[in-house]
Image (tube, rainbow, N blue to C red; front, side, top):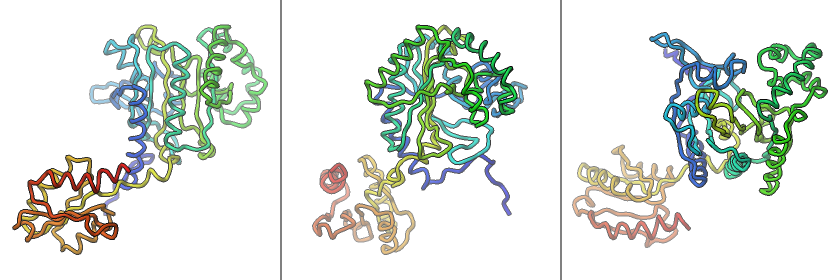
Length: 428
């Protein structure tokens, strides 16, 4: 008996499930290409120090959730828990961190947390990073891009939450006052928040604990410690969003989970997900690349969890593309001719299924019907001897005359039939 199973928090994506994944990914890639954003691919495995320095040692991701181990060379390695730090490392290492760039990546990430709907220990993210851009217009463009991508996928009940975290000086001024308040009100906080006071106090603002949220209503607000310049930047962000008619809600407790954010932080949620509502999150991280050893480089980005996206995307994206041509064939010579013909047909924009079963014609016709094939090609012994094949629309009730006998090698007649009956009809 085979007791081998996948690890908890990992799932198999089977062919029928992947139809929706592939359709979603196709739309994502089309939207990114239209926005002139280029792909970057970084390793899944990185040195642990990258994430300690890049994400922050006091964050939950680094302190609780990373998959970290020593390799055979006694080096500490980590399966990437997010993509931004890896992109920053790649740009610094390859001397590209000073260039203006718009980049995207997509692939698996790993975090040790409790598996739930739309959240696994191996999960997938789409990430977009604008490198070298400091204008508030880049903040607006990247928020608009995320908003439009989700809209294109038919995600309903979308809500945009925004906040500003100011610059480093703003946060240091706020943190001094906030720490004083925390010490006085420590007993009003949940245990996790109490533990964060000395490690990562800003993350307390993002607590989901109801008791802590209630207590924070009386805490100092970062917004009141912003410089005039930071206030103007935030005001410009809101004005630009209003021009684009992108609705937003201000959430002054929105700080995101990572240490590297500055100024703009945002999340896009969907009411269709209940308590696990966040679909997209991001923000500006002007200090990260310098902090990791590169030049002073402004940047902003976002990430979208694909598992949640799949849960929310429309049902129509689960529908597979029907087979255009199903090749029914039987007999040694016929099977050889069918193999050659299938290769030729795939050079057109056609989904071609070659029956390899050797079953009877009736069984092959049943399989073509099950796949809802638009048309069939029939090659048997008689056709093979005559050097020809029959091609016809599978549903002949539409037009009895949409059938033709074509000689092998007569590419002109074959292409003409395909254009008249398959390619043109698909576009109409």
